[in-house]
Image (cartoon, rainbow, N blue to C red; front, side, top):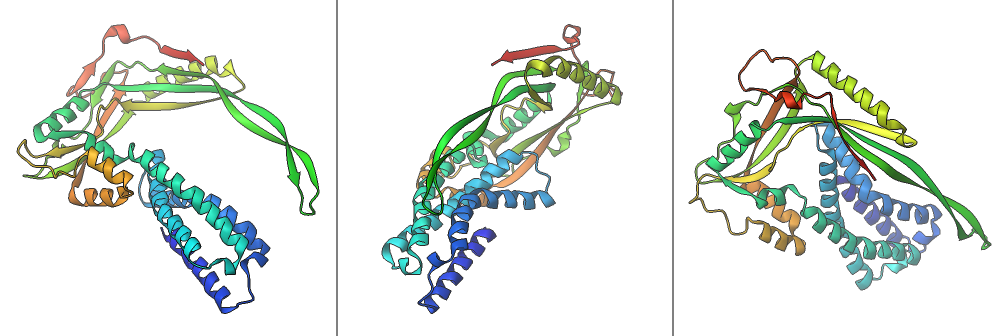
Length: 356
């Protein structure tokens, strides 16, 4: 938002300077004519990206993709009103005197970006944290039972594999140079084509829940809170980790030749049915009538999604709980909450392959 503020201030300073000098015209500045379209094209993505980097400097962010899309929504929401403001000024005030071409370029960008920003904010709202909270409401005892079920869920560890190649296509494009001469040039585009995806699950013998059950959230009397569940899965010992890495190495060696390029990743997680939900003290606790997903979508379509989110977050406290587990092929020292898996699942590995 600071970047938007600086950008607006620079525009105002430029316009004031032009107003003081009646002979000056923004169209006369070739550098500005080139810079404005570039800045307007890059800014909607650059500002959220810089915001995300600054945010990550002081807080560990695991779900970077979700946070980035959320920041894009915030900036798109702010930008939408800035674009609408500019469209109004362009149509009602004589700003063409500052440079007819450059003000028209900004006007075209505004007409394109304003509706696109509105559409993006609406689409992102369906995946927002607030919408997830509002979709599910538990009573205090139901929330505790849901968390206890998450504690008893078996973790999963597997390798995700992807093979692909790069497909390059070319086309002839008509162009006109600065001297008005026309001609054709060849443009090349490269597209990633995925031909194989697969998962190789690691089957371990033991797992243990390490969650601190004393920190299970408890809803205060006659109140509504937001609860968010986090997950963490680790190897209990080096021997189990080495066994997984050896299996992963064999799996990658078997599948990497399916195409020119490949990439793989390790995924360790717990299947949590609901990661975010609302919790109320008891059945008789009244949730405000506006605090539901229907009202959220209603205000979203009325361009008030972020004011709604701010009020919703201010009026509901947030509590978190981490579901932490360890896995091992060796007996874990403490037998508390330890689970021995069936010998039938003790295979070297099981591959789930899917050819695209």
